[in-house]
Length: 428
Ligand code: EPU
Image (cartoon, rainbow, N blue to C red; front, side):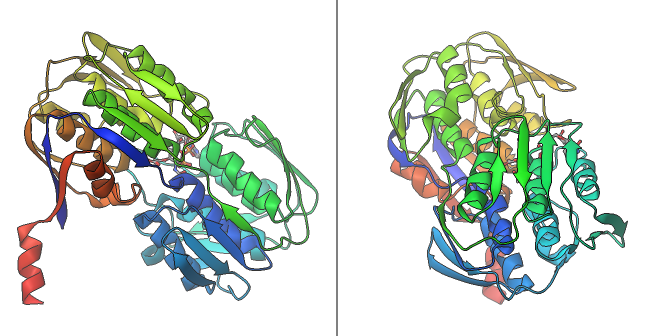
């Protein structure tokens, strides 16, 4: 096991390059299974969630060749299995995308239910409803989700909740189905648009991605393609929040400023000076953050995946802020950890009342999930003295080279092997 050791209390300064978007990559890679030829995917983030997907692709029979750490060539032509076992899917939310991709490829899928971050109940009823509308018979047997269809036919699907995963899965299943599929009340996140652009670059016919209504006219064949994944909006937002938290001055490159609008708006409300360029953003903070209320919502609202990071900055703001979680039932589990560092936060259901304290104090804390882990790093960078963050495998799922990137910004952060493991390592 490893942990991060952070000596905080100084501003971060410099330039950081943002990697490809995790949540686009984990949809686009399974989508390669729909192609009838080789695909090259660029700007892939080097994170453990991506490695996990590539492992599943190999197990299914696809040929996967890493050209360099951000480019992969995948030949899906010989993929002949439709089973993603529990062992293959472990720890990865996006395993569910293999349901849509395999149904779309061979009208057959058997996939272990997704793992990923624990935010309370994470149902997939809207995914199932979509597959059934397209003609698949869905069952859950022996802990596996099973889908089979003689053929898939386009249909209208109205999503009862705006779901990123269901929108993506229905797109994957519909892209080669016969006729027209319409997804109403679809999610509008940038990675939905990226997936549609990827599929269209292979010859798919998808319109309306990025709006609440997506129309997919099924095609018979999808060609191979070369495609570069969009920059990670949440990784960018995390570094921006860290700059505001530490009164720093950083420039983040390889970003799409349009995807950062809601984050920029809130950080400006907190007093940050933010300059936007074509593919870069500069964030400068010279004062203590001001209080600010934040409510997370599906895109274009403030992203839930930035909620722990912004709440952590608000922990040292002047005044009392209210953060409301509008997407997940339970995404405040990290608050107990921040409290150990002296934060004053009261959680009531989906709402957190944050009374700003003048500073956080170091403490041993845990990453309870991916974004909560990023928030603990931000807290550690703010606190004078040494903070240790455990359970960092959560963070490795979604942040490429986080130690190197923060170190290049002048932070003192190290990855350290926890002694117990060292003993086991020596014995081996
Ligand atoms: N929901 C249902 N039924 C469904 C699907 C979802 O009720 O069939 C509910 C969920 O319980 C939740 C809401 O709808 O309350 C939104 O869930 P959504 O399906 O949009 O989430 P997801 O697809 O499982 C993705 C991201 C998450 C991100 C959410 C919301 C990936 C791999 N994961 O999850 O990202 O929080 O959308 O934007 O794309 C992260 O990156 O840290 C992360 C957790």
